[in-house]
Structure formats: structure tokens, C-alpha cells
Length: 300
Image (cartoon, rainbow, N blue to C red):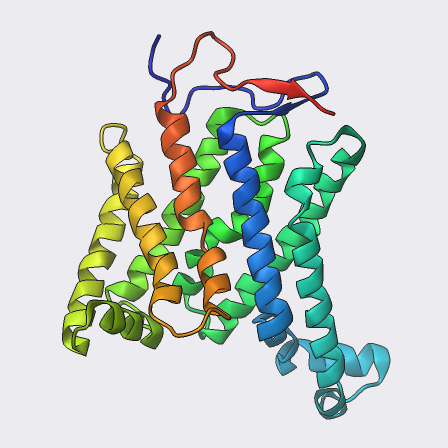
């Protein structure tokens, strides 16, 4: 049996009425479930960067006045309660969509997979809002690539996409996430205060030491991203991503008192370590035939 390379073409979903099976698929379902539930909770209870997309006077003042005859000042003064309600509904919708990864395994409910599209779109818009809040810094919008990609990766796994394309998509998302994190950690952008305070709290160190530690971590992020695209170093790069992705997620709950919202902030970063873990497994798995190393089972 030959080792399956990153670019071996293997079907995840065949022509019959079957769904992927195996622990890797359950892990993918769990990742998407946790990501949507956590982001939904944060949106519902703790607001969302989506709000920033609305408060763009340059974008909306002219259309509001032209099509609806509503001056921007009037809109800004009276829309806040309605906007808050809409964001709460978005949060509840995302939490509802957290059950979709499990519903798609039931034959009569397979149509629910399409709910992953609007859920994924909300994650995209949330990320764009975060980018706007960060003065349009590229590092911010790419740092959440794995989170944003997770529902679309599940859809890909349920389709006739090849293993090569799926793994390539995860690799791109992982690279973007760790490059984004690295840009902040090394100080290319202003190092976020939360990065500094979490490091100081967990390591019990001074600010200068924390900044040095973060700079080293940022450099390792870039090394890992480079290593991800070299076959010989790929497993080691993924092991680093798994470990550091889990550590940075757990740092949210370890460095703060209380669980809300920090437990959700930890859970929403599950994809930062779980998807590299799946990539490591699939890139080193062994195949017994020419078509697939992934078993399938009929839909129920």
C-alpha cells in the first residue's frame, strides 16, 4: 500500500445515495456544529461585527435617501433597536444551524445541507465586519479563514468533490489563518492588547517578555505555513498547527475569569486545530484501492 499524497484524487461522495462515514467525517460534523453554535451564541448574547456593516454612512446614505427617502441621520437615530433584534435573530439562526451537520445524515432531511450556505454567508459577513472594525487590516480578515470555511468544507465533503480539492481547500484556509495570526504576533500590525494580556496572564511575565514570546510564535506560524506546502515537512507543520491552534483557543478561557463569553470564544476556534488534525490524518492515510480510502454508508 502506498502512502496517499496530498494531491491524490479520491471521491468523498459517490454517485449513489450515500454519505461519507468514518471518524474523520464525524469530527468534521462536530467542528462545524461547535463553530456555528459558538458564533451564534456570541452574536446573540454579545453582539457582532455585523453591526459595523450597517454603520457605513458612505455605503448606505445615498441608497437610503434615493430609494426610501430616509435621511442617514434619521436612520442612525432610530434603527438601533431593530438592528439589535436582527442580530439576535441571526445568532439564533446560527445556533439552529448547528444541528444541520447531524441532520444531513438522515435521508429525508438531507435538504437541510443548503442551510449551511446562509450560515456560511453570515460567517463571511461577520468576518468582513471584523475587518472593517480593524481599519481594514488584511490580517484580521484572513485570521478567521478556517472558521469561515468550515460550513463550506462540510458541503464539499457531502458533494462529489475530490479529496485533493477538499484537502487543498483546507490547506489554503489553514495557511491564511496562521499567516493572519502571525502578522499580528510579530508586530506587523499593532499587537492586539488581548494577545498581550493573555500571554502575560498565562505565562506570568512582563509585557516585553510577552511581546518577545508572541514574535517567536509569529515566526513559527510563517515557518509552519511554508512547511505545509512541502511534502517532507507537511506532517510537522500540521502538528504545530494542531498544538498552537488548540493553545490559542484555550488561552481565551484560561486567561479570563468566568466562562461567558470566553468558553464560546474558545469553542469558536475549534477549527483552528481540528481541521489541521483532519488534514494530517487524510494526508497520511493509507488506501486499499485506486478509488477511495474513505468508507461510505447509505443515508438513513
